[in-house]
Image (cartoon, rainbow, N blue to C red):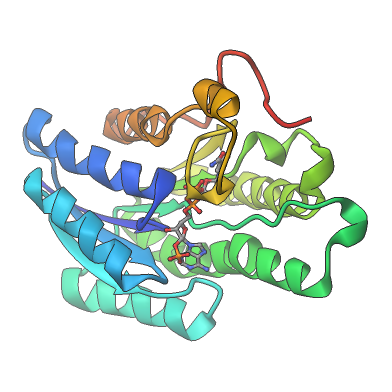
Length: 243
Ligand SMILES: NC(=O)c1ccc[n+]([C@@H]2O[C@H](COP(=O)([O-])OP(=O)(O)OC[C@H]3O[C@@H](n4cnc5c(N)ncnc54)[C@H](OP(=O)(O)O)[C@@H]3O)[C@@H](O)[C@H]2O)c1
């Protein structure tokens, strides 16, 4: 059976790993045929990830889109529905972070963070949810963070946006329960991805890898529709890295 799956931020890091794990699951799960709609602002990344996914037998489509832009969200959802008729899964993974002491964060840092993490996530979900509500099935993942419930000194804006995402998804769950739509809050600790830039070797050694997050996410999707994994909290075994 074909599954239409939108993954935002699929060009790098955790999003790329989620796309690859959905693609490989098509080889191990009978009757699971993912059609992966890969979204980010960098076309060259999407081309690369799409080719990697196709090598595992998945079908792919790519969308160069900024989820902070309402017109681009509209185009993404409308084109997906025109081409494929439905949406089975939305992975709200695209996210940004600017990590500085609280007193050094600027208005530009604020606008940039909120535009993707809150506005983009909110309005994309708002556009997709009615499709799932109407057919009474679907699954929406939110890649929030442990920073959605734990404070770190350098993460005041980032945490604000992630606490906000958590508040939003908890509210959506109240709608989703009555129409069989599954909502999963994925809360990773430190994962070694391009988001971190250069990190010291000793830190890299203890950080998780993107596939440590994507594996449990894809497993949660493949559970029977009657079962909802509501939260996945996944940390490095040594605990949180940034204080
Ligand atoms: N890495 C961690 O330690 C960690 C821990 C907890 C939670 N998370 C969360 O996990 C998610 C993925 O993080 P990551 O570490 O994989 O980050 P990453 O390596 O920086 O990758 C982020 C992806 O999102 C895309 N993106 C960012 N803003 C976008 C926008 N406005 N529209 C469309 N695409 C956008 C980026 O591509 P373009 O820039 O080309 O658009 C990129 O493909 C984020 O929500 C992050 O907050 C990460």
